[in-house]
Image 1 (tube, rainbow, N blue to C red):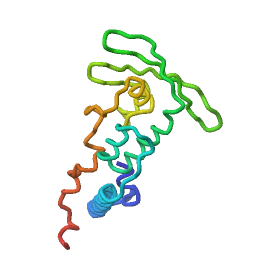
Image 2: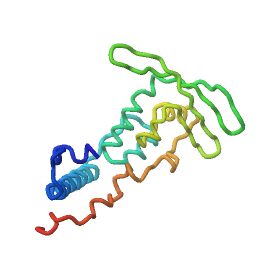
Image 3: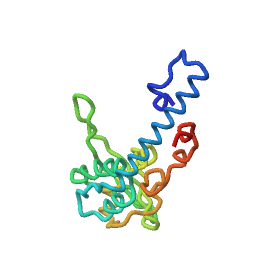
Image 4: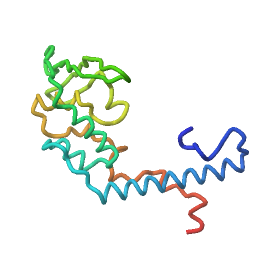
Length: 178
């Protein structure tokens, strides 16, 4: 909430000012969303690989989210998943990755579970759960299992460019002058 109201309200804002500033903040958020939506539909960011998964993200996701996916794809070349164990249809891989912290680099090993049945994957890093994009660890496991399509469970509505955000439909006092 602090980010939403940043620059609009402060600790000494009275109730009337708060309502007016809330309206201004909402108006600005809607304008920014509409501009981002327009940009996502009118500007196509080129793919950096031949991956059909990247192509699907390019088609479906907003440009901002697609750029996040591309940042993950850039690191695939450095990763080599190692099959740790197989338990029925689920394979567990270890993926060693470099984590850059201020002045030094640290090697971290992530565990990725991959199901052959439904192509579901879960990584210990939790990037998908936190940011809504597939991490490089899952993407490299998909690659080594010849998964050349994007499973539906990894296409989130909140990241899609063809979904109209409901809050942009909220009536606000600034609509009165239009």
